[in-house]
Image (cartoon, rainbow over all chains, first blue to last red):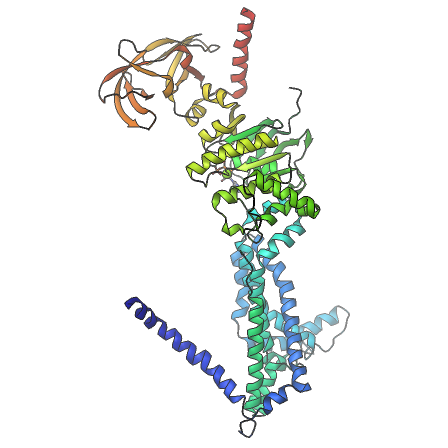
Length: 267
Length: 369
Ligand SMILES: Nc1ncnc2c1ncn2[C@@H]1O[C@H](COP(=O)(O)OP(=O)(O)OP(=O)(O)O)[C@@H](O)[C@H]1O
Ligand SMILES: [Mg+2]
């Protein structure tokens, strides 16, 4: 009995933390979403969300987040694989992680410099004989920079999963006749799937709500749900609509989490 | 002798970086259908030999032949050899059926054939009906049997087993020793088994290779190795033994513990310094007058079946005796042994010289007849 009260006492700070910083804000967001721009209780925001503009925006967000996640994965998996095979793997890993400590805004501005009309990228294109072109404010630069920013978060869980893999399993596969590719398909990939899933979660979910990059790098050509929320709160001052979009964003995120955390047996 | 060896090592060397070689000019032949054991202390290179046969690593120099063909550079997945790993290396994301079927799926065996083969392999290892179990839900002994089933289902020419019993408790271990030996007889597949447990090696093998520091010290049947160890290392490693410094006065006469004894060995130089081995179970406790040597009892341990008695002779040699009779500590007793119980070993004799010497006197015997 006493043990239990004791344990509950220890739980208190965490419970408080979660109530104040997680549950309360979500409830507030839900609460705000039921008020229209004039402060009247209504469902107009929800009705508005199901109009072409917002659905298009949702689709857009999905598409870019998907693109960013897939490209990150395609680059991160081989990188993590090679990393686990190098001699000083922890050092190499650290070098890849370090850029993620730099402020996002700084990195964004650095890319504006690189992709600008007179930036390094264009000078290289000129030198290569391709000629300079508009790089900044394109879909390409947006996805490129987003992938650059998210990639360490994709590499880390995949690296950990690969590093944990028992090497004798790979010998066993080859012993049983598997080629390198079959070993990858039948053993390495299934056993590192959990790492891939957590990598996709930490990339896809923030990518859904990216907003700073859309303005700085994509020049507002790419409008995602994140941008829309920012606009509603700061520009239009329609908190209700902003909150409604946030509610949908939360629903989508929870759905994605649930989808990717279905655990496989035995792993 | 006409039988072609299935595996042959010719002066195989294996070296990592600039360290001392892990395997130093290892040569041996493995015949089809027999049960071989690699026996040696930790770090002597047993696993390295298995990895070379399986194809997980390449020799620094020397040739490895499979049925007479050099296979040094043939990758593991192209060799008709399967391994039972020390840690089993079962795939945790697959169930028992899929683990066993792994090799068959790669060979694209038809579903019906595969079902039949997996079933047969599992019943071979007494795991009928465990097809749908998860690997994580199996006990250590069961996992090991799945690992064996996964190897035999491919019908390889050779199965390599790397200390597969070391993780099991004593009882299960004895049971598995019987089962493995029985399995090998039924299947007729060549087994190469690694252990550092001498009892296990003696109980299971047709032939044993005793290894130390990357060299084969001696090879032969369990009886050969037990009765005629080539040197101190083998004598000491295989069973309990009394190893005593001695002098070979002449053929059939050896001196130790201050006395001369008749023996059955020959072919050494006169007055050559040698070592003799007498197994503790070969000696008999008698009265001082009847004994071959006189010793004082120093310690005694009850081992269940017998007493293990430690004695000291007048010249300071320690003698270990196994006896069903109890002794009294401090008492003077006699130890009796016959010329056949004494085995003389030359210092630093190589296996070739040893064999040559033994051959030489079996020829003498033939001539005499
Ligand atoms: N990849 C490697 N790099 C460097 N040294 C190695 C490597 N693999 C094995 N060795 C060395 O080779 C020697 C023999 O190793 P091996 O694994 O064959 O021993 P073993 O006889 O199987 O021992 P155990 O009974 O402990 O399993 C050891 O000294 C080990 O340190
Ligand atoms: Mg080993």
